[in-house]
Length: 482
Image (cartoon, rainbow, N blue to C red; front, side, top):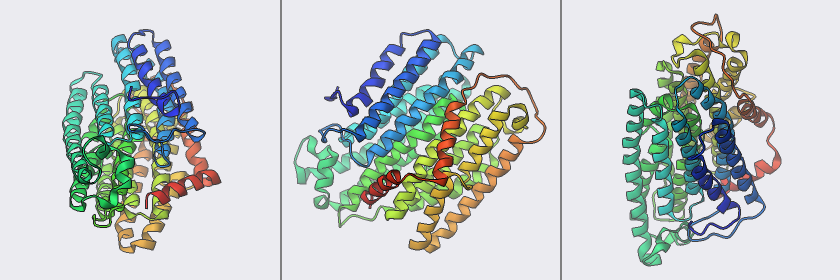
């Protein structure tokens, strides 16, 4: 398929694809769960091998210093989520919420989703990247509606319709990029190959590039979850299986962001094109402030953290829009910390919803008493995602604010206000959830706590100490982003 070699980049795509075909025919839950997690682990190893050996760019696949950050993060969270998924889906089978047929479908779709996300990151052809992101969208639509309840099907349809609008806008932007490239590189596939486009970026028609970026930002911005293009995200998180919530917040949003950053680089290399930074900063600030206030009105625990994802993607978009070595470094670090922290929170929330048999915040109280490990895990996750020291999110947010004061002091005011609003909402919500007398039912759950502990442990360590090789790596990538 698309000339995949038996090296890291080829294996990253081949392993989930082959595993998906096998999982369709395995009815045994334990075997399929182990195969799902084992395949995700092998994909992670293949991603790590890219540090040692990577092939030169081809017409379809590309491994460079930018996408390797996303690929390693993507495969790591994909693996840990598959480990969490094993215990979560096992409980859903025991309680009758899922059938054996749905289980086979779920595991196969999980691997197809990882394949689509990895292909989008590895694609050297912007048309192939668009197809891969569309595949990821369609796969998650099917998984969001897997429970077949009225609410789940409604959420899936909303996601499908809004996602289709977004991907259609992105397709139009992709076509415009090809039109801008055709007079320079000629007819044929060269006009879609990223490495060719960036090489000739300065000679492309700036008017077409400007128009294309607007469509691409709106189209892929829908996938990122930036306001006002976010409407699908809370429903998809609330009604789908919780492992998919973790993948949506920890992976899919980043993949769409990666696409936007690619085209931002294209505009930055053309002296006649508009500066894409102000557009990203505007959408980022709007998303941050809007989501911060919306957190106060959430009544569903998964919707609460869905809006938190909108808030943090706003911060990341703002940081990359601001640009410069420090802001880009902060954006990369915040993206990494958010993926690790938010997926850890959803690992916790998934088992909490199973233990309490509800997602309504008002019916969940005193978790540190009734389920101490889950309760304190949620507290640690919220402390981290709210940006409190010594967690890694505090470090990345501090760098975003610092770079904003240095380069655009007036914008630091709405940025800090948005952060404080969201901070207050999260602490207010977690106080009732975690402390006080337990209320409602409390079921025992066979929870897999290791993924949650691993993620929060990494976020804690990152807040105290970042290894020099990691800092140098992020600084190098930040320099590439201009």
